[in-house]
Length: 160
Image 1: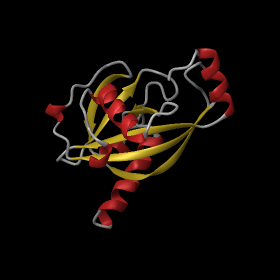
Image 2: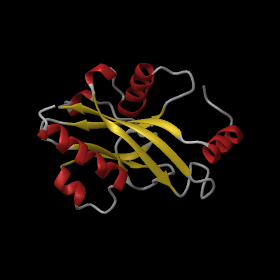
Image 3: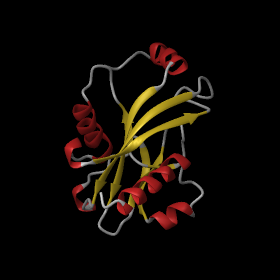
């Protein structure tokens, strides 16, 4: 259910939003990043993702976000939950006011063939596969995106 701008602005100012981030990794170990068009984090390299809508089951939200952000269907059962994260931003989709607080479920989709993706340009101006070492050395990769690298490393150490 989409809200009017006025209602959505009130919600952003009053409560955290819940979202899903899609950490897509190819067989080379590279992560798919998009350069964000919109606030918050405009201009940053970020993983695809988006908000869960009111009364939307998680499986449905995951599938919708994959379609919208990746142009391809993936089921949540095919991904691994990395962890829950808190993302705090000084701005919002509406500008400098109000600030934004997200609770984010980060999911890893592993070894995705980039040829199967049909990446839309509505949320990101461009996409790039980036190796984790390069991500850490690229100033425009957002710190919230870098946090997923630690979770991936932990999963690998545990053999998950």
